[in-house]
Length: 191
Ligand code: AMP
Image (cartoon, rainbow, N blue to C red):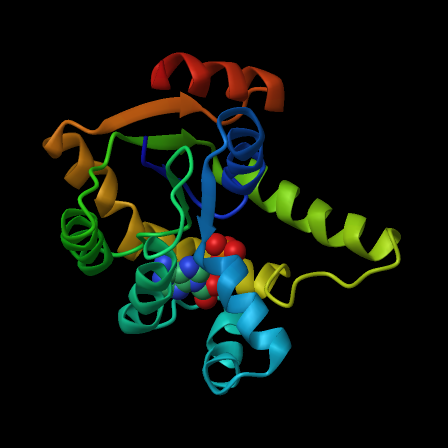
C-alpha cells in the first residue's frame, strides 16, 4: 500500500508515519528528513537548499522529485509513506508519473486536519523540548519561519486537497485528537 500523509507543518505527519513503519513495515519517505540529512552532511545540494529551508520556503520541485525517485528504486517492503511530499501540484503530477513508471499506485491520501493555533503551539513546543533535551531546535522551528511555512502550505500545498479529492483518493482524519486516536483513525481508514 502506498499513501501520502498531507497536512501543514506540525500536523503530526512524522509521528504517524513512524507508527505506520512499525505497525505495517512501510517505508517512510520524508523529503524534509532527506533534505536535512543533505544539509548536515554538507553535500553541494545540501548547501544550496540550506538557506531556503531555514527561511521556511519550499525548495525546488526538481530537487525533491529527484530525491523521491532515488528512493523508489530501492526495496518497497509494505509500501511507501510519502511524508511531506508532494507539496505542489507539479510534485503531485511527478509522483503519479513515477509510481506508474515503477508499477505502483497510490492507495490513499490521508489529510490530517488541524488548526493554526495548535500548529504554532506544537512547533514552538517541539523547539523548546529539543533544547531542554540538550539538543538544538530545527533551524526553521521559530515563529518567523513558521509563518512562512504556513503561508507556503496554504498557497502551494493545500490545493492538493481538492486535487486528490477530485481523484477520489482523499480521506481526512482529525489531527487534533490524541496520537493514539489519530493512529486508530488512520488504521480504520486504511483498512
Ligand atoms: P518538513 O520536515 O517536511 O517540515 O520540511 C522542512 C523543509 O524542507 C520545508 O520547509 C522545505 O523547505 C523543505 N521541503 C521538504 N519537503 C519538501 C517538498 N516536498 N517540496 C519542497 N520543499 C520541501
